[in-house]
Length: 187
Image 1 (cartoon, rainbow, N blue to C red):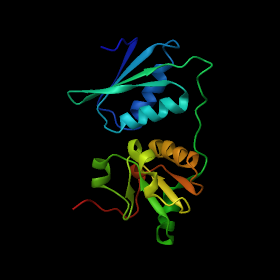
Image 2 (image 1 turned 45 degrees about the horizontal axis):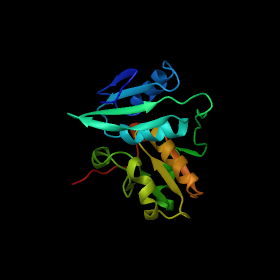
Image 3 (image 1 turned 120 degrees about the horizontal axis):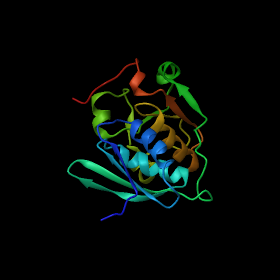
Image 4 (image 1 turned 180 degrees about the horizontal axis):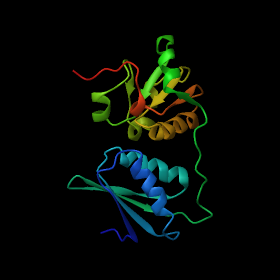
């Protein structure tokens, strides 16, 4: 049994809200203390692990108990904490719509269920939690447009790609929640 100092209930919330609430709540505990985040959003596992790493906090792991994901984070000391960065290269939804015929790769980093019901035609699906081990499926020289529901998960994915040597990466904002271009669904 993991000893926790604070529990955050983020059940029923979709991205980006589990992360938004996690950021606020981790600010309420002391360095070295452990926060338990309870969530039902399947994407929250990759989101929270990625965010914790980027902020300098220690991601301790996740337990799945009766469809509730319990994420555990140890708050970083001031010396370990990192300033959160926002990926600077973005493209607005309307700009991407006009570029769809020009080539490049639309990379959708949402979870498979989200992708199945509403996606940009031809988009490649690699959920954020799988991205690092599936980098070889992407062309480093290609224009890559990274999309998620709101632009938050895709921000972290864009940073990961840039850190791994991909030079032509753009984060699509505000993402599929406001996409009014062509879509397709799984048959």
